[in-house]
Amino acid sequence: MSPLTHPAHRSAMHAPHDQSRCPLMPTYGAPQVQFVRGEGVRLWDADGKGYLDLLAGLAVTGLGHSHPAVAEALYQQAQTLVHVSNLFGTEPGWQVAVTLDRLLGGGGQVFFANSGAEANECAIKLARKWGGRGKHVVVSALGSFHGRTLATLHATGQPQKHEAFQPLPEGFRHVAWNDLAALEAAIDPSVAAIFLEPVQGEGGVNPATVEYFEGVRQLCDERGLLFMVDEVQTGLGRTGEWFGHQHFGVKPDVVTMAKALGNGVPIGACWARADVANAFEPGDHATTYGGQPLAAAAARAVLAVMEAEDVPARATRAGARLTALLEADPHVAHVRGLGLLLAAQLADGIDARAVAAAALERGLVLNAVTSSALRLAPSLLITDDEIDEAVATLALAFTDTETAS
Ligand SMILES: Cc1ncc(COP(=O)(O)O)c(C=O)c1O
Image (cartoon, rainbow, N blue to C red; front, side, top):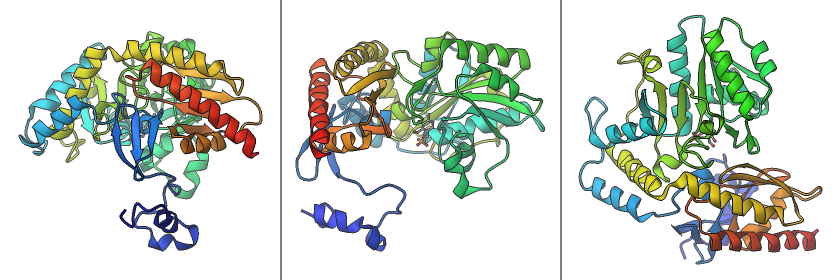
């Protein structure tokens, strides 16, 4: 066992009194587990212990870990062409853009990025270029999450995350979630775009209502604003539709995505209606890696498997089973979310963080999205047996937590 994988060394490395020995910046809490391998919905740690992964890298590995089609695509592309500058054309990215545009209903164009925050930066810059000087404000919702770069941090409607990094870039405004009147009141001639998630993921798995999204679309049409939707967490089948906004029957002007697109290979994308995308001119926006052949080949394979497996339908079915089983447990007050982006709101007095820790101990990976709710966002290919096993393990974790308290 290497010194870095030995639990004693790990805890020593992350001991608060000895941060200087850890090679990583202290931006994340001390990890409880170091994973070394994954396959489908299973993970293994450095000591060979197996885990059932109900989190999928926070809604990233939609096809499960080490999907063979993605691994093969990476292998083939790595032997063919990994990278050239975006000054030149390459085939995989072009094909991914065509597929994404089709899944979004057509009539748009795509800019590739490397992450969700960068896809959102593209959307924010596009809104500013489209709006022109003086019409640059982006209105987003309280409780939202849009990323950690300075602009996307300010778009994120969680003021407590802003304070340490003030001053943040100007041009962001936040309104109450699912409240059309509050949104309307925030609109003035300086506003270029409304930017919302179909389901607030990091904010606690809170879906928008149909009336809200319909109302926002109408408001944007009446006031000449862009409706931009952040599908970084909700996109690509997770909610039971290809994109979360499709539950609400509206067509946004701009859609961003990342997470599931590469099944773990970093790639993000910003799609916009072609006439909006055409606000950009050569030189307005760029990235070295975005859309490079290696990442795009992974995304091309991901989309092919997703379409072949009809992942939206699978997410709907699996989500219904998971919801029903969780709601049958007396420790769960209710389950909210769409498809396979779910939060189990726990009964009064149960500490979600303690339950998540007990579940991890028992080999089940999930996340306390709030102090009283667990987030479940497994692979969209999860089987019924795996769902049943996960819920049975969670029941044991509830008992462990009760015994400990
Ligand atoms: C809705 C949403 N937008 C943006 C982001 C940021 O994505 P990234 O961490 O890839 O920059 C996230 C990440 O959780 C997200 O959930």
